[in-house]
Image (cartoon, rainbow, N blue to C red; front, side, top):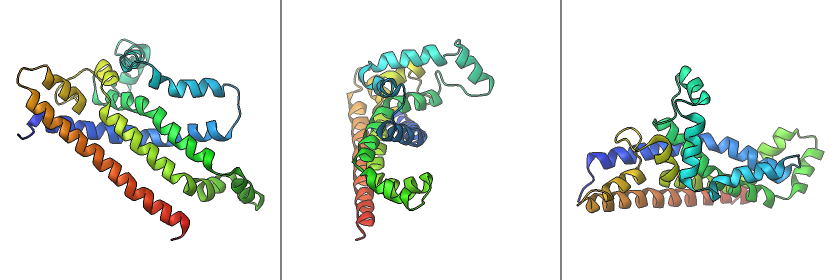
Length: 229
């Protein structure tokens, strides 16, 4: 059994979508995690609830809300299309859906890492005259790198496996919006398509295992660097 052209296309699109969704989410997830872990402000509970909402809502509901907000007939959708950015029924919409679904996992991992850092270390650096940006980049960031890596891997894995929100928002168009989970679902709807479905499942497992192994290697290197070994 070998993957057919549709399987390879779905894998390439899934990787493309997952990488873009993860890269775009990292800065925002880190900022939100830092705000939730280190700041007190009005609406903090609402922000925390909004961040985690995709985890408790059915993915299809999230996809439908995206369709309402960014569909071609929606004001926001028309405004974006006017500047050349189409989201609904386009691979870029799959990036947005994957980013939203993986965002809570990334924020959670990063927030826990930030909360594990002793604030006294940051206060000591600030008392020596270091500006806030230097405290974050030279003290906080190196200590939370394992958490950032963990959040990145979880976000990437969620993006690779996202199905409900994606198929609702961008449909299941082969070669255009059909990601690996959508292709597996399509194969299972065709009599005799189980073999291709199994192949694509193995492809998805291989990508997931590779991502986890890579994160472990990077986490160990970061830990050695922090410990000075």
